[in-house]
Length: 478
Image 1 (tube, one colour):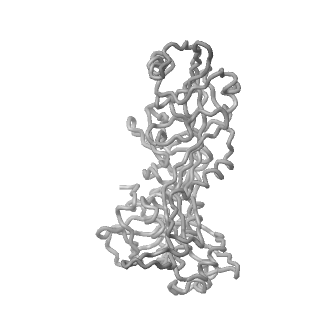
Image 2 (cartoon, rainbow, N blue to C red):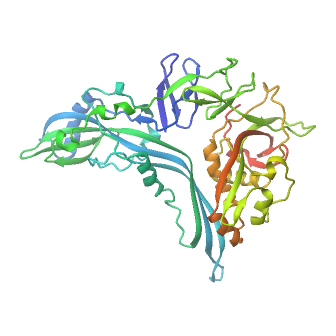
Image 3 (cartoon, rainbow, N blue to C red):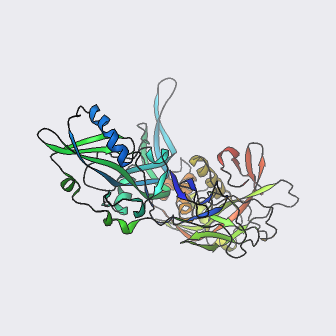
């Protein structure tokens, strides 16, 4: 979904994708942080026709309906709200799957599958009237959206109120998360679904409504304001009865407050490194890390892992969420890696001291990865066999490259459960039954940057050589 705003420096149009956190104006070159993305932002799709164009071209639409003799009366622009939900779906299936041998023999074997997809779902946030548009489809992806604000409305525009709450929208959309995942050959014994990085927004869609009179009756034509075609005809209705006298002022107090703020370090005043999708920014001058919060910058704590001695490759630091967790099961609390090995004997052994003796370390990638499956696999690899955490001082960072933080802390906690299930062997039915009833609690979380170097088709972590394909990583810095 693309969003269009005005540059605060020169007034030029800035068009950016919904996931972007930092924008740069193509006209004046100024760089700004997007503020106010928390909560449920509200956008609008502008109609392709103005009122004057609609008046001139409505005759051709009526001709296509065989109604050129209808008398045209009032023309109104109506904005109807739609909930739009986006995110990444991770759906684990554990059970038995039917296999067919080359000879045609059928057998059932223990199976375990992870199904993933990008989730983009929209539906009406109003209950009445029926405008015959159940979903926005690809419109929000193909047309840049504008911020919905009362200054963009004329005095005669009608805005339908939001009648579906956020809680109702969440419940309704959750029933569509696993759509398309069904498999008749899979006998499910345990399933787990997580929606990561979900973003809830309201999109106001334009409809032109024309009052018409025929030979013996009157009614309304509902016209799609983007596709410019008649969606339905409603007879024996007028504007007052059909829209129940909805007023624009009913939602005027709920408009979004998305704005741009200067992208500079609040302590030293130097420009922060430009990484468009990053939620966290490390200042190379004063070595502090910042995250935008309610229009200001808030400092966040982070750590840097040192490279091995005599290491000669060029590196770039990639962020991970360091989660110290405990797992509550019906048999008790798993407080450390030794306890986790009683459930998952396949885990490699290692020394435990300090924090490791009181909690389980999970490392979740926070940088942007194109493939949801690659994200899950890398998270599992770092959770099963965590690399060394020998820390280095935060000094001489001017020449270091830092990848942006694109996965938030709450999303990392959700992905921790996806990683836990992936660690369960498919034949270990005891572990499967325990994990099914388990609950993860996060004791502490922090950002930690690991050094990666390029080798062939992969980026590899400098201490462990854990790989990830270069093509799946979206680099935010040059």
